[in-house]
Length: 263
Image (cartoon, rainbow, N blue to C red; front, top):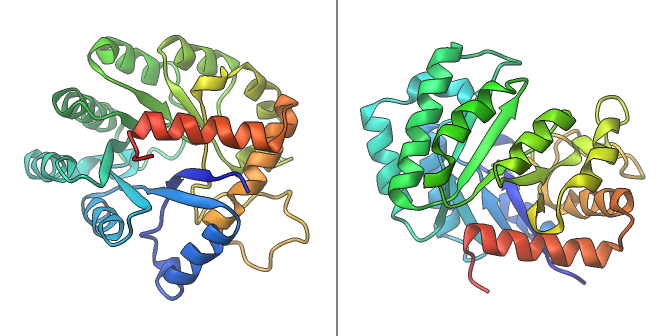
C-alpha cells in the first residue's frame, strides 16, 4: 500500500469531536499515514497545533482564513509568530483571498494576506494559500513578494486555466481536492490537472468538506474525512493517465519536501 499525505484536513471541525481517534484509524487503514491540520482562525490555529502535538504523524498550519480576515491584528500576528516556532507547525496559512463569499471586506482580506506573507518571509516557512474567484488580484499580491518566500501552495485549486498558469509561473504548488470528482462543477479540472508539473502537485481532502462524489457505494454521510483521500488520488491519476501508485508516490514526495516533514 503506497502511503499518502493529506495536505489539508480541517480536523479541528466540531464534526470530528465524537470520533476523532476513529477518523485517524480509518485513514491509516487505507494508507493515509500523515496529515496536515489546517489552522484557519486564531483559535483554530492553536487547536491545530495542539492536535498535532499529540500525534507524531499530524502536522499543522497557522493562519487566518480570508473569511476571518478581520481577526488579523497585532496580537493575532504575534500568536501566529509564536505558533510558527513549534516543530509541528509547518506552514503559514490558511490565508489568501476569497471574493466568492466576501465574508470580509476585500481590502481587509488583502491586508491580512500581505501580513501573512511578511510573516512567512520572516519565519522562512512555506505558505498554505486559499484563492476563490480572486484572480488576478491574488496573483498580483503574491507576485510582489514571491522572491522573498520559500514555497507556496494554492490549496484546493478550483479555478480556470489562466489562474492555474499564473500560479505555476509564480512557482507555486497546486493542491487538488474532491472538487475534481464533482461532475457538476469540477469537470474542467480533469483537463487542467494534466498541466501541473509532476513536482508541483499535491492532494488533499479539505475534510470535512468536499466529499468525492465518485465514491461508490455512495456514503451515507456528507462529512468528508481523510480516509477518502485515495479516491482523490485515483481520480487525479486517471485524469493524468498514470498509475495510482505513481501518483501516490509523487504527491507524497512533494508534500514531504514542501512541508519539510520527517522521512
